Length: 336
Image: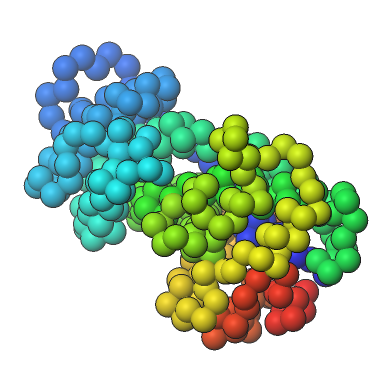
């Protein structure tokens, strides 16, 4: 029996694709003379690792394109503070709303979305390759492990997977912005399958926030119940020593926020649907178009996992999810 946590974790395995997202390099730009040049400056700064400058330029571009709807300042601060500040998340929400509603096809919008996606990942330390390799390892080691009968190595493995997943998800608004950026890039540049895959990744990363955000602020933080078993409140860091009591607490004491909540259960279904369909379509096209045998093997392996997950949840609806109170109860409803 595979575990529910792996169903969530494995969806983001393909985050390794993000590491291959190309950033165009623009040379010789001085003072920008128009919006398109400013967007080129943003992508150049992102490529050089100057994320604050890149996001500052991006905010100005979006402000110009949106006719002032999107704030022209403080985008970098909004990203950095988004885990702790409501006003910061409101700023990100304004950007997300614009991206999800605009029909603009301007080159400036594409450049800016690309610069923002790269800069936010860099600023927030979302190490795509580390995530990918870690979750592949978790999945491979977790084959055949049962939730109800675990050894020390089993619960340590599950604990570590949950910890990595929770620490990667940050806050709901940031993940929604990253999904909107990926969706925008996919709309403007459908031939680049990286954007379709990244859209799926960020849809998936919203799921643990929905499941475990017990105080309802849209953020996974030490005030949420799951952190009781993940967090060392004396050092303000994730625990390094794992115990069976922590494992049992996560599995049977932390109530899922989808329990008896159809709205949140529907949100999980919607994000799963977006994640699986985007990842499957993107990976299939990448496999068919790649001449790199090693990359094809990796992508094929990951796609097998995605298809397995899709087959498992095919008959799972919001009503079913809303009846599951704890992670440890999942196998009472789904046979894997």
